[in-house]
Structure formats: C-alpha cells, structure tokens
Image 1 (cartoon, rainbow over the protein chains, first blue to last red):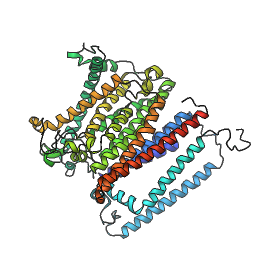
Image 2 (image 1 turned 180 degrees about the vertical axis):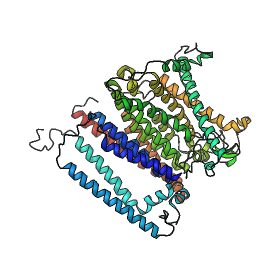
Image 3 (image 1 turned 120 degrees about the vertical axis):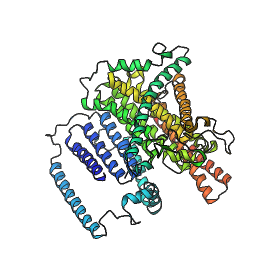
Image 4 (image 1 turned 60 degrees about the vertical axis):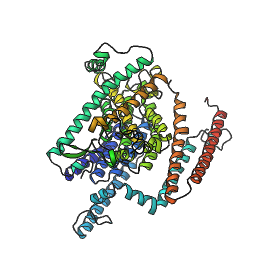
Length: 193
Length: 405
C-alpha cells in the first residue's frame, strides 16, 4: 500500500516537474508545478506528516503559484514562447552543467545515506530521537504539529524571527521599487526619468 | 498508514462499507442540499422583495432547480475560439471538487453529550459522523478554500476574452486578501480549542459559555463571517460577477453543464461555509446548553439524531443570514473592499489574536487578569493610533501626487 502511494505520488511529482520544463506555455507550466506540489503533499501524508502536507498545499499551491498565475495574467505574458530564440546565449550550457551537477550530487547523497541507514540496525528509517520509525513518531506527536511547534519556537526561534525579518525587508523593498518617484526625489541620470 | 479515522486501523470489508456509505450519503445530501438551497434563496429573496418567487414547478416551486438544471444539461456546450481548450474544460472541476471535499471534515452529527467524543456505532464499527477526522482538519479547510481560487482564476483567464479576465483577476485578489483575515480569526479559535481537528474543536465547545463565539469574544466570529462572505464572492462582496460592469464575471463564456458546475459549486460553498462557521464557533452538533444542565438538550427526543438536527438547525440560520445579506446590502466599491480587508479586518484580527494569547499566558503564569486586560488595551490602542497615523500620512501623500481617492 505504502509502495503504491509512493509510486503514484512519485509519478505525479516527476510528471509535474517534466511538465514545468517541457510545456512552452507559462500557464500550463505553472499548473504542472501545482501537480508537483500536490505530489509532494501526498508523500508527506504517506509519512503521517499531515501538518506539513496541509501547509505545503496552503502556502505553495494556494499562495505562491496563485501569485505566479496572477502575474502571468496581469502582465499578459501568457503566450507560448518560441524556444528556438535564445536571448541570453550562455544560459543553456550553464543550465545543463548545473543540472547535471545537481543530479550527481543528489545521487551521491542518496547512495551515501542508504549506506548510512543500512549500517544502523534494521535498515529502516530510524531517524527520530525516540528511536521509532518516522510514521510512528509522527503519529505519536499529533501529526507532528506539537513537535514541530516546540522545535521552531524554542530551539530555532532566532532563525525563525530572522526569517520573518527577511520577509519584512522584502516587502519594504518591493514597496520602494514599485513606488513612483516624486518630483524632488533623487533620480539617476541617463534613465530618462 | 492513514490515521484519518479510527476504523481504518484494522481494515476489513465492513470498514470499507461504512466509509462507502458515508461518502455516498454526503454526496447525495450535498447535491440535494444545494438544490434546496437555490430554491430557498430564491424564495426568501422573493419574500423580502414582496414577490412570489418560483411557484410553478412542483409544490411551492420546490422542483424549480431541477427543471433549471435539466434545461442547462440539454443546452449546447460552447467553447470559444480564443479559449485555451484544456484549461477551459478543467476549470469547472477545479471549482467544483474543493466545494465538495470541504464536506469531508465537517462533523455532521454524533454523540458529544457528557464528554463523549462524538463516536457512534455504525454496522458494529465505532466511527465519527464525518468522513475524515485528520489531525489538521482546520488547515485542510484553508487548503481547500485556497484551491478553490484556481477554478475561478483559470476559468476567467482561459475564456480568452476581456470581461471574464477582469472578473477572475478581481476574484483572485479578493480571495487572497480575505484569506488572511479568515486565517487570523481561525487562529483565535485554534488558540482557545488547543487542537486543529474539527471534531476536537466541537468537543471543546461543551456548553454555551464555551462555544467559541463566546469564548473568543465575538469579534473573531464577526471577522470570520465577513471574510467568509468575501471568500464565497457573495453579496455584498460579489464584485467578481458584478453584472452591471462585467457582463457575467468569470463565467461569462461558459454554458451548459460547465456553467452548471460553477453554479453548483457556488451554492455548495455557501452551505459548506455555513457548516464551517457552525463547527468553529457554534459547537456543531453540540446542543444549546447553559452551564449546569439548565436548558438541557431540547432536541433530545430525537435520540441519536439530535446532533445532526442541531447541525441542520444552526446551518439553516446561517444560510438565512447569507440570503438576508444578499437581499439587503448594496455591493461595495473595489477600493472599499480592499480597504476593509487590509486596513481594518487584518489588523483587528491580528490584534485580537494577540490579546487572546496574552490572556492565555497571563492565565498560565497566574498574573492579575485586570492588569493583563489593561495592558492589552493600552498596547492595542497605541498600535491602532500608529496604524491610523500611517494611513493618514500615506493618504496625504497620495493626494499630493494627484490620486483620485
């Protein structure tokens, strides 16, 4: 059963990811991204990480991709791109190198971690401090809401607050960039404004 | 591996049968309920406007919706030339499916008397009268309401014409803005209840003074009701389909069964949102009880169905309120809508949530309740003054730059 769910969700994730790259229509690519995010949410549910699954859907599918689509619609870039045109010459070779490198790195990480877990007893996913399989630990901690909250708001509270500061900075910067300059403001010469 | 319901732990034929029965019952009740809701809305509005309303099909016009639906099914199904065909055909289902899925986490009955947790016995299996009870039930509601945006947004965009696009851009901006206020008032409920599961939230509201509408101090409920109306795109927040400006809004280009799906989803959402309000703030299947057994369960003669009867009764009240809104309130202007959402409801929801959290900490630490209240009011007053000052400054700047509003 778990294997079946994994295969189906994995197919969703991969299919969506390939769709993001292959579809040459921006809206279709964004919808493929939603498919991928849903697949990941399903994988979270299969590990009994219900909270992460819900947040994955609310934040990524519900807010971020909606924002993508909103921008695509408002800016009117919702036309299929001609992929033969390449405005920035080096990007494809660089993308190929980075992609290949990432693939090798991830593959190495998977192989290394597999060796590490088989070295530990049982060979299962014994990664939690309670020495329980991941799903059982998640079930015990109320769909890992409490455990996650305790962790984020006690041990990692500084990092958490710093992240929120970062978000506020981003908001302020966006407002500054989007603001129309007033007459008395400093204007860079040569921009024609 | 699925901890959604206790009976799924030892999976056998009866368990599967019970789940199937629940699914089928919810599906049928959902569809029939929507049909009756359309009739109810038309009748009540007609009553408020001194008209008769539908009265030809069936007794009191009860079958009018069925007749309309049948007619819609046999209409020609059009796909505009400019439409993005795949997305155009997908969008109605994206609107319809989340509307149905919300049903699965609303407790529709069950025995919560004397501290029982709402489990009933069905075919010899202990189960709850809701399709699924995930530990993150409330978050699932939020997730589904954010998925529902996709249906409307993509419908408007894929039609390949101007008015639907305008309607869908309005819709997505409105729904995203009001989801923040919705989430903040929800957070107050979660803070008081101490759980995210919907049946746990119902369980926590064992008497009238513990109903969250009272326990959170009414304000989160008011915010939730307004934000929910905006989420549903119902009047007075129905700028999405403002007929006078946008022809028909996001669904202008839709016809036949696809239009019917949007229509169905809209009314289904009204019912499920009323169910959500009842669950979160009014105790769901819990009877109206005042403390120590005074005014006990007046519907107890219905035996095991009393919980369901209470849900039905409370949901009906809210359905009436929604229809009442539609019949009496004029539509907001778009800048009024955004001002209300961002400058009033979100700060108010956040401030109230902080106040409740402050009281909670004071309770745990044994601080003087009045001192906590006074300090909270001072802080909230200061923040409100700061916010209104900032609003005034930015309004003055806008005026200087020559904006119209």
